[in-house]
Length: 331
Image 1 (cartoon, rainbow, N blue to C red):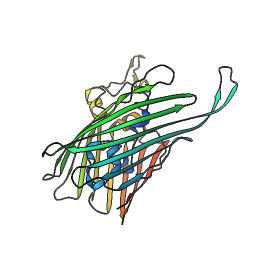
Image 2 (tube, rainbow, N blue to C red):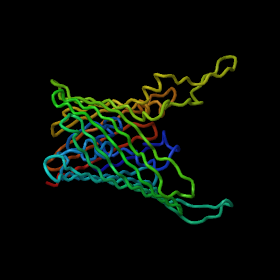
Image 3 (cartoon, one colour):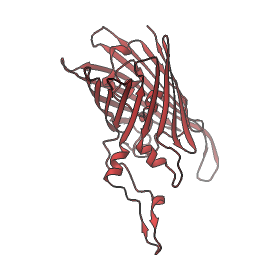
Image 4 (cartoon, one colour):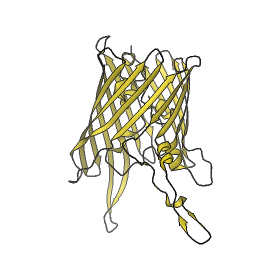
């Protein structure tokens, strides 16, 4: 799917590891459902970039190509394709994520210009999923090769995703668990080895029996607790000048791990999608001002062998994001 975007998508947990681009939103559908959804088992070939256990025969010969216009001159894109070798379980998936950070003016410690420099990163993935025996459980894995160039510094790495999903066709209920980006740098930028952006997610979804709606609940970044930190700007000062810092309790941390989403008419040619990210809302809200951070809204439309998607996601008063997507059935 093709997508255009402006605004920050992954800065809140940034700075703690390298290759942060691996956790970018991969499609308008995911963006519309709050930014992360790991339980869709259908035609959506881009879904496997986040949870390889969702690779299935409905993805056969589906091609998704993604592009995002990011902050400034930064742009990123993803591509995904799946091919079924036979009609049982032999479906293979390939994916690509690419980021171009644009051009920058370089200066030395004396303020003398050293010319322009650029940076870019890319990851190529191979994925496969299989049923566990004759059960309702499936397991899948992505193997990713990572390349990064920032000015004169280069780094190469390897990572893997492992996902599990439970599919109950009778209840139309799915539950998924995925461990993403565990791996290592093979070569470092300047001799200092950094960790990768490990992420653990748990998700549930179900299509209601008498209503054309599928609900989604995702618990993200379970590898980090607490996920919230005190914001000095949100502290209070009493009449005596005593300062009380922002209190971040158990519930505040729990809710920031939570993403909600719903998809109306999920099996038809026209879909309506809504999502809410509590962490994004809490981290990007402005005091004493309602800016609806965390909300996202999207639609999907199918024409013959083409699927078009559009999503608008609210980040802050200064940064809203629009995603536009395309998926092609090559059969």
